[in-house]
Length: 245
Image: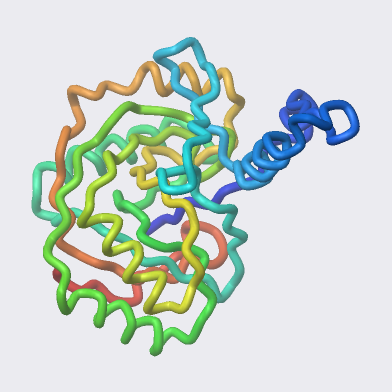
């Protein structure tokens, strides 16, 4: 079983809590206001750090920096490309055990395979996408990633997750994948989800605080690229092909 990071827009309550001055009220700051407005429209996944009292982690950084992952609406034709650990590795076992435990503790949480999404929500022909996935491995070496903090967000598929530190190899693969799929470049926020759930936000914060990071790997090799059919419920997701890097 596999999973993808489906994002939802922040709730209407959150949106109403954010007020951006209009051109009429701040004519001398119209250029800045436009920039903030664009950033807020693009910011569709507010991530929260439990280590700083639940404040919004929404690094609205320069256009060259890592920002939030774009909104993805799953359909029956959706596919995703993942990086996955070796199933025989200790890192895979530790991550899968944590995902299984969290799923068993929350009624709406499904079990899924530990992974870092390269691209998601791709609509296309299965055979062509499999060929593209295989072609991405031609000049790509196994990717090794280092994990950052455990965080939570307002979305289902990033309910509680572990940040992945940016690396050149990871972002080169991301850029190559979007280019091969003829997708426009979007902001990329690599992470590894630990639980998918619609639990309340207070519960998300508590769970993010409670995750035992000592039981999780600090680094992991991701030697496999996997194409997954991710339309419909998680229980129906299907691995199309796995290709070693």
